[in-house]
Image (cartoon, rainbow, N blue to C red; front, side, top):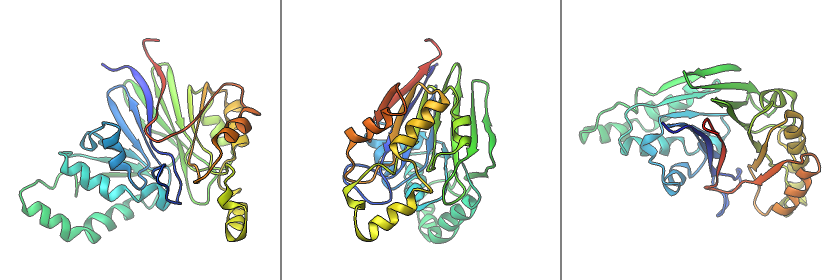
Length: 279
């Protein structure tokens, strides 16, 4: 049995499209199980680039339902089904069931009916197990636990903590600084942290400058990301959710003013190890 806990960053970008950063998504490896967290634009292609069969990913958790975190859902479901996946469980905030039904029993219904007429089974498409969650323990197994906590964003959003053996990994989702995230991440080996407020030349003037000011209530700066990591006592801080054109060296320096341990600038297809139960 694989005894490692790790995360592969599939997309480290934001709503503004980029040739270099795909839409927000990551896959958490919990031993031999895979959990996709968020499903931004390009997620299925990124799974293939990471040498992960989309059909092998049977569990998906959404932090929230903004478009940049959900636009890849339709392709992930249909693409994985085409690769042979016949069961899928999805967790996320209220509204997830409506999104799922709108896509697969309404908008894509005729498309799916055609594909079924070719001889494929409907399992994995019209029987997706959708669970709308509240904060607390949401998945409990013999060897691992997944816990959700509400964080501070413009809509209801949760962060997730994965505990496996002696090791733990936290994915912040989109959030400003908040004590709830600090509490959830307490003592974690790895914190994957929203860093959308990293400085970018594209947000220094005009309409974009006004948007930038508003985003301060809903996202995290490099300094605040470091503060969260320091207060939570995590071992590694991995920064993600970047705007195009950010200065990654400046991001690392700003975060290091608050956090003295390891800081990693997330890049698409990077894998970060939280630990192994054989450590």
